[in-house]
Image (cartoon, rainbow, N blue to C red; front, side):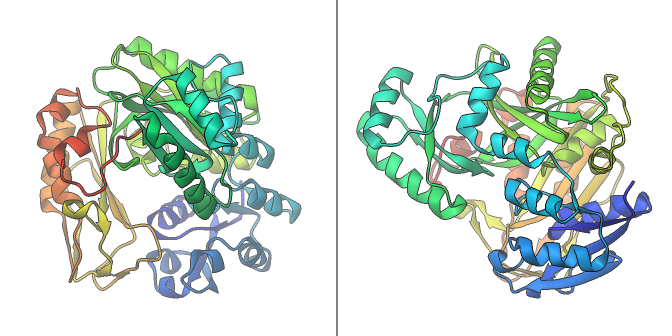
Length: 457
């Protein structure tokens, strides 16, 4: 196992990784931008280094600065968390060229998976079920129109380098496709530095279900069950749970087997997530692979008892995953609620400001992952996530009741700051959510006047 790990991230995930490292006896090095100089992660790490101003491209997205600190601090490995450089194959390759272990899949694997169109082809070859779509990037609007006619409407235009729910446009009317194609290309170029896009059939009434996998260098590959991530706003998740309500065990096992098969086919290593759409008939269709720790990983930890960050570190250091190749038993139900500094009544617009109050709930089987505290400033430079509330129950009804109690107790306040907590209480109480019959359209149905609603995948 490593002696020193640099955590190339900020916020709750940086603190989360640092805490696991401490339990494993690993020394940690934090990096921070100017506004994060007194952050919880900086205070928790054994050593911390300033790497730049608030702009991410001059700090957390600056590979040269991060690698320089890692070498100066004597780190052997770099854990990227999620977001920022976590799925950047160039960063992984830079780490490797400087003798640093990147905690994630090999750079060449990440490069293939990061191109969503290429990834579709690889998974189709591995036998995973696919929605109709293009077999590679679509180079012109005219080609998009022709392909969409073959695929059938509605279609979704996606950035090949996309991620985090960004760089997507749903098109229902053929007349709207040329403009949506051009708009998505522009957005992809700005967000990802790559304007290429591809097309896929869009499912209106679908559920977003993902499978967590672990693979190591000893030939072990297992799945850890599913997470239902159907409660989303504008392609981005708000609430996740496991197990997925109403999915037959046989369906879950087929999805899990498909995910492990796909992971083996591309030489995947570490913790990864295979994302699927499940249609009204219960059939599942591959979407994409995330080769990093997920924001929602704690719900899987709650039902398996595994520390997924520890598993990542084991694999990266050359050790086998702790379960070997054995199936991992799962017990009970877990729900994660994302407390974001956003105003649901205004289209989930971010509401930065200074926290006057931050009082997370306690209670049995209640976990709060957060870097926040009273007096901390939530800046507009970074993601609006303030905290993740994770609860476990013996069954789904108990987990829902516990999540509702904990959300009602959560106190997050400050001038101009709104959060998603109240809206998530409404989600928990919604009849379709309670019945487990909701789809990715639930949020737009609950907020029909949302200024920017969009079906999600």
